[in-house]
Image (cartoon, rainbow, N blue to C red):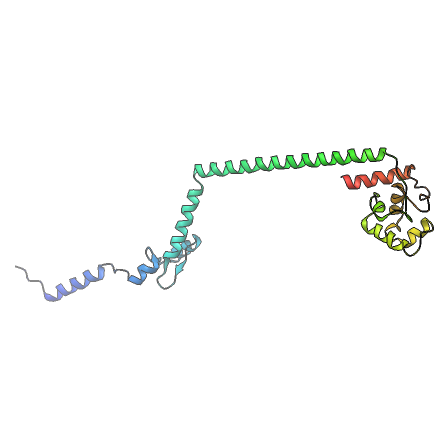
Length: 221
């Protein structure tokens, strides 16, 4: 029987222990997912893929691996043929509802515009009644088209001081009627000063009809 020297046995034992892979520590297992990265290429690839690297152990962290796995699962679930079909159906439903809503809104607006046109045509066909600036009630003035509530207030406030002597007096004292357009419009709708319309803007004049038409378009469209 061949006797193996004790030194040889010791060397063999040491070599066997050295060749046996070391077991990762409990802390490593708690922190890391998979094996250490060890190379720059693997480390860069992991970061490009969205993983977080633990610098102590040079590994992918369990937390980042879990997050990416969940994201992948969610993406895959959201991109199954069934999920895509459901999204397309929902999109088409919303488009259809939006189209119906817009069509209904457009119809309602057109009907409202037509009604305003009808009312205006009827009003234009009726005789324009004169409204005397010095004696009309505030309610009568407020009912005159073309006069805003602010202008009516200005008229009432000024005439309590003294009656208006003529249109020159009106445009000087009533700021809301100081512009030619507003004065013409007021006369076109029947406002008079001491029984007289603004010269050239009598209700039956061409300029008065134009002023009323312009006012109508501005308020109907």
